[in-house]
Image 1 (spheres, helix red, strand yellow):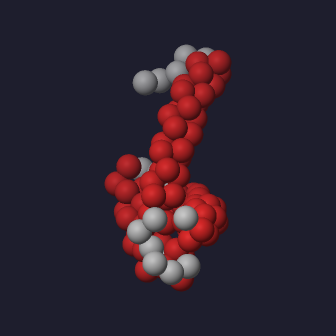
Image 2 (tube, rainbow, N blue to C red; image 1 turned 90 degrees about the vertical axis):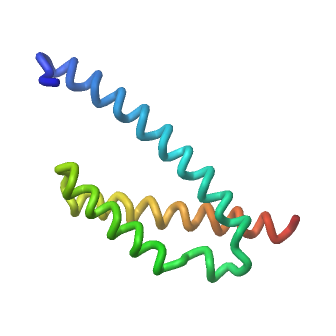
Length: 96
């Protein structure tokens, strides 16, 4: 789709943002669930899993024509924040 005006571009970006935020929220719920399956706090960071995800999304970025550096940076930041959230969930699960 080729936009015909700046307002149309912005409206399309707003729709994409809405979808992205919904997907990030959904991903976050699964991250919290992952904490319930981990036995130690060391398993939360899972550096080998982080690298698997980075490799996967970099490949997807290439396939879909996205900027690979942008995608890697976004995912590294998102993963860091999800690890923080998962640490919190893990600590809550220890109390249960």
